[in-house]
Image (cartoon, rainbow over all chains, first blue to last red; front, side, top):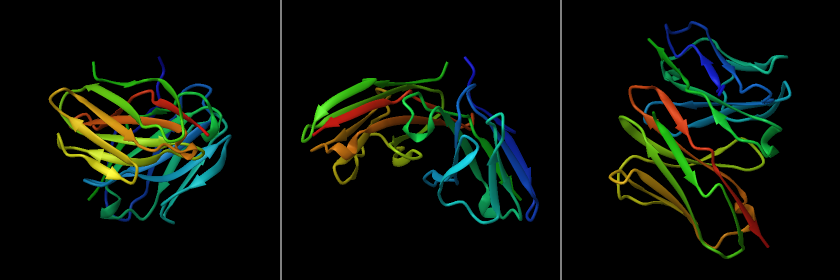
Amino acid sequence: AAGVIQSPRHLIKEKRETATLKCYPIPRHDTVYWYQQGPGQDPQFLISFYEKMQSDKGSIPDRFSAQQFSDYHSELNMSSLELGDSALYFCASSLGGANGNYGYTFGSGTRLTVV
Amino acid sequence: EDKVVQSPLSLVVHEGDTVTLNCSYEVTNFRSLLWYKQEKKAPTFLFMLTSSGIEKKSGRLSSILDKKELFSILNITATQTGDSAVYLCAVYASGTYKYIFGTGTRLKVLA
């Protein structure tokens, strides 16, 4: 069965560079959520989109932006990278927004290392 | 094949009841197990468990991990209608850089 696809799996960037992470939801899922988990830290909710509109915002830095496209995939853009941005970034998708009665599926994550 | 199984899939209780949600797993290089709650917004993080036999508590919620028997339970005492949600369990396996999620337990608490 198709799952949530994230790309790339691993990414190494230098400080002050820009990175773009991509998330392709389960087919027909219309909602995407982004999470960040730093080494040894609890996962932090960043942002979510429902039907291509931002639906909820968490602790996303101003240097980050995200959007959901017409095919429902989402991209997380990270600029002026800092060492502290090194983390596992994972996304999840669902159908019908946070009130949907369908399953909730997470991707495998993208591990970003800033050097 | 790595997998995480949650049970029950769905549960309906009355306010004041105590519920126990189960999460069993089979993964290589287990590192941590996480519990999440999904209600009317993005899932919120509840607990991260890494050590066997150590209970974590937060108000009426508590969770414990058994690394020998490969499972975790999430207890909710004196349930309230606000506890109605989907509870997700995820296991992180080091070396694979990925989370493996269960399908969740849908809890409904009736007034």
